[in-house]
Image (cartoon, rainbow, N blue to C red; front, side, top):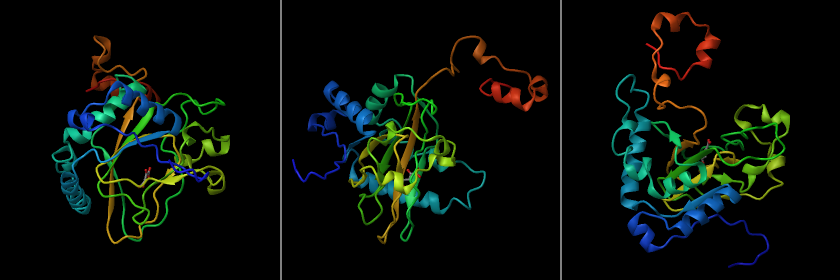
Length: 272
Ligand SMILES: O=C(O)CCC(=O)C(=O)O
């Protein structure tokens, strides 16, 4: 291990060749990964997905994004193969860490997203994707929203690997910042804390607490940089599959006569 006295290490979870072959983390690795996530705010497992397959996915992703404007009401290609491959939407390593951190009943929505930077793209503002669960409290609660990122090319400083502030998920914002859109963080404030650019091989899997400060960096390469982004939530009180009452459908004529405020309160209720 280097001892420069000034190192900010990327929190990588080293896993064995047996774990890779079996697509299953040992309980020790789940514990170590969950601990990195809890303490650093993210954990990276490098080179999980085959490079040649990731290269195909990268081409498919670019095709979808470059045809986005022509596509109007047709079928969504992101809900088809290769994007719906279980190695992405049900990644076994990510799932084990997600469930250890947020419980067995996590949920997510499809289609998932993609963060892309193109040659010449500028620097992004520093932000969190999620604020604190109870922003008015002077301490942070355990994680309840996590993004899983999968880079489709090698992430380098040159092509604008994401900059991340480890530990920032535990920082409490002042009221003014708390109420700003996108939880933007001032440059001067972030500069008081260590950060790194998330250099990693294509096909790695990143599990990141969405409260971490981060930003896309300028892409100074000649190529596009895509990164898949799948968001997972801890389940709290919404119970769509509870037996009985939660599945009841409110008739159309009743629903349409409810106030907008009432429709908002009952927004998860099935209705005609
Ligand atoms: O593209 C990136 O490097 C990060 C972008 C991102 O995570 C975001 O906009 O929330």
